[in-house]
Structure formats: C-alpha cells, structure tokens
Length: 255
Image (cartoon, rainbow, N blue to C red; front, top):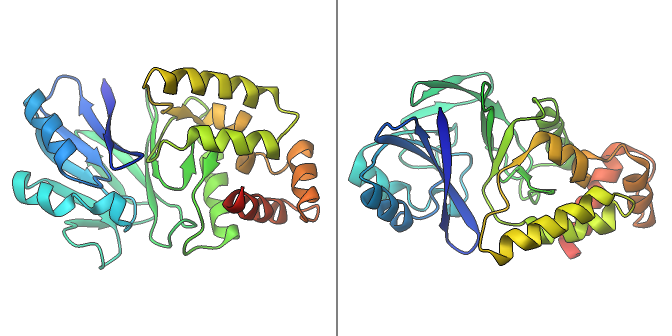
C-alpha cells in the first residue's frame, strides 16, 4: 500500500513524501527547501530514491540541489532546461515508475507553461497536481492562459472521483472564503468551511482533497452551474464557461 505524508515547508507549502508499504526508500514531490526533508528522512531512517518536480517555481525546486547532492535520487520533471538537476524529463503521455508503481504524466499548463502533474490509478488513486488544482481553488495564471488552465482542470474532473488530490499549498481557508462568494447557493461550501476551520485550529492539513469533493465545492470546476455563472455575471462575465472561469480567476486575484 502506498502512503503519502505531508512535510510542511516555507510559509504554506507541502512537500509530499510517498512511501510504498514499509520500504525505507521514498519519493518526495516538489521540495521547495531541503532542511525539513532532511530532518524527516534522518528522523525516520529513510532513503530518498526519487524526486518528482511539477514546475520551475523556486518554492517547488529550491531544495533540489541540496537533496540531490546528499542522497543522489532520480529526479523526474518537465522539459524545462531552466530546472537544473533533472535526470528524466517527461511530458504528456509518458509513464514513470515511482517505488514500483506506474504514474501517468499529464501536461497541465496554466499556472506555468511547463507545469506537469502525476497521476496513478489504483487503490488509492493519487494525483500530485502542484499549483494547478488546489482544495477549492486553482493556481494563478503566471504564464498560461485561462483557456489552458480551464482545459487542465477539466482533465482532472474526468479522473475517478475517489482520486486523492495532493496540492502543493495550504490555501484552503482563503479559497473557501472566495468559493462562498463565487458559489453562494452551495451549502457544501459552508460545510467545507466549517471542517477546514476545525482542522486548521488543530494544526492539521486540509489536504488531501478528492476529485469528487472538488467537483462539489470548487467554483473553477463548477463554471457550468447556474449559481457560479450568475455570480461571475455580476462581475462582468458573459454567459460562457471560459468567460466565467476567466472572470472568477481575475476576481480571486483581487478578492
């Protein structure tokens, strides 16, 4: 059985540590800094076999050089030469093996142009989506277009609903506050807010989410619903899903 553990890093990042059964070899996803990973590995007597990178931003790659120098893991990441230290560059349709399990590579541009995500089916199905899909939100459009991001999110929406979603940031409280404004008739958002506040009060992560949960509460995956389209219309969107998404993302930037 594959298990996933969050390693908090920087101000609000999660570096996800993947482990297969009780093996001492592990994988980490998007190590924005090295010290918390090293501390965890040394404390638990683990060996770093693999690193997965989703995109080039420093808060996802900042610890890569130090971890590679210390543990010599296999580093897998996108076709971006600006990311130093990648051993295996992958893109859409590629498959990689992580701790003996096959992961499918999905190109998911929007937040950045080089952004990729990693999905493995099975029990449980796992999605490591970096800064593309968040719990109740999605990433800012630093390089990509609204159309690219909406296409990436729609691909996630087609995954099995029980898929566990491991996003890279603890943004859930702010995202749910916006979701209430963007989807005001959705009682599931209110319930999710209450659950989130309890978790954070206890110092617990609000992640992982699931695809099914995101389809219920994430306004960016609900641009076809009447409530979201009406809310976006009040902000100037016309009655079109791409226009609704574009308006939501711009509205969130200033929310």
